Length: 519
Image (tube, rainbow, N blue to C red; front, side):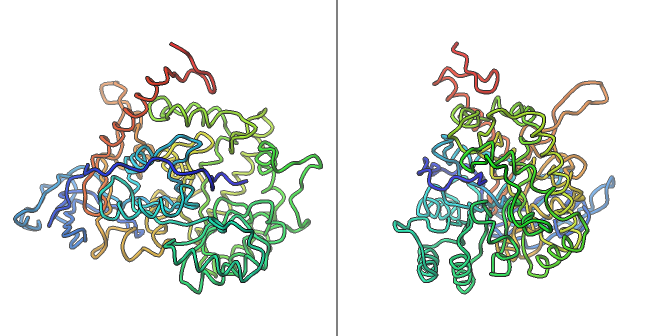
């Protein structure tokens, strides 16, 4: 059931170019309303003082609607820069816990993907497969850390077994692969499932090395190893939701597969997945509670990626999203279309019955995730874009909206998107909240995202003015990463030009899904 490419070959790397402004010996962001992501409510106006990429001071400088007290304001040092943020909102940079860096099949090169992410305030990503190759990803990670390319900071999680020419069939071979993976510089491992003895050995060795892990519990192995088994063995996070309903089964041991089911048939896989949660224990039942409490007790992270499956419950909405026209490159658009061989293109004859099942699936899934959060479990935000009509950056903001739909308060949504992501990556002493001593990864936006998360989309949100004029407002104004200020709107304009040029080259126009018009 993976929505992840694992052996797709490398794509073109991001160009080495200085597009941001800074870093400065001192940067002062003046007069903003701060959403610091610790769970505190917004406060402002504040001045935020940054020196050499470290937040040194967060100073309240007045009261809303009252002239700012200049005597309370931090002084600008020689060579420093001031950024006027009066009337604007400042948040920590977003963490995308499931960010594939493009793909050959999608035709999505690194510059295109990175700018879509950075244009939406995403300053850190976890690549959960390194589909372009570990060396490729580590090179981009290094250049990003040196601010030589326009890109989020990167955590590289290789797929277990990647690069191994011979099948791994013994626990010692599994341990050896894990040791080699760490020696090669990976930050962690992404699993899809393994025979129990191999999985236990790999997780144990990875844990000994102090590395983190993620798993998409695919159906081919989940029948004998679900998410509880993984968490007990040392897995630090799960992707999507596979393996969780299976841990919640009471009256069966396997998913109720139709007798003509074939896992290699994409509509079978995704269609039947929409009927899986209703086979699990009832919400708040004893077994349901026991599984939840057990996972929370192990400090286990759930990265639900709600957005990547949303087309399953409303295909028309996903394929006609307003940003496709200007921000989706032709090759990616073609990859999304119905196909028996393209992964995630399972629209063989998708209809009302499948969508109704998936809507009910979401209700049960969201109930578990919201309660997991309520009881103290860590829930993060990940997008898995590049598949199923979900576009990089835009899909991440949709994930935040879906966390809100699940029951999260907007402040809880922001915390999942920032601090909790940083915690899951072991980076919360560096990023994830706006606090003294942390790095200057920040978002500045004109509108209040707590009132309407849609203002975070690069296309903004529709608003009616007092003069009865329809306008678009919002979109991230500045993305600050490592103290370097990027014009987020210019980054998205660069993407629009990339798309425009490719369409001209191919004489391509999106009319209806899967239809090209030669002009």
